[in-house]
Image 1 (cartoon, rainbow, N blue to C red):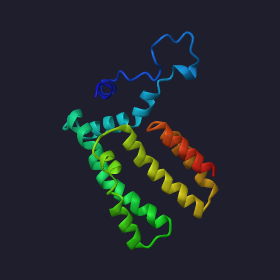
Image 2 (cartoon, one colour):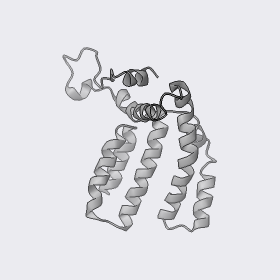
Image 3 (tube, helix red, strand yellow):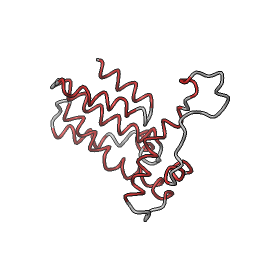
Length: 167
């Protein structure tokens, strides 16, 4: 919340750690925690501005991921089933049964950047699967953009997405 308030006030957040940087290389000085949270902070700040300050940052952070998760996660699971060639009925069952694992229930109940990054990864994964069935050269810049944008969510998902793209 402090970071989002700082962004809203125009101060910004430095991505470089402030501790003794004289002995560190540029890569060692980057704070990965700041980068991992940037996707959620950016989304929260944009939504707060779009809502014209009618919703406080506390309520926005508390309700952001439960609402986004409940809307998009079943749709993404359904689309994943359909893109793998499953029937409509099997895809709907996968979408419904996908809500059973406790880890996924928990992920949708907390506004954490890892969980938001998982939704972004799942949407990007769907595009990679669709590319495998219909490979077009003009899609390559889109996948490179998605892999780089995933670094703003959770770095592990960005690495997995890049590996899937290479395969």
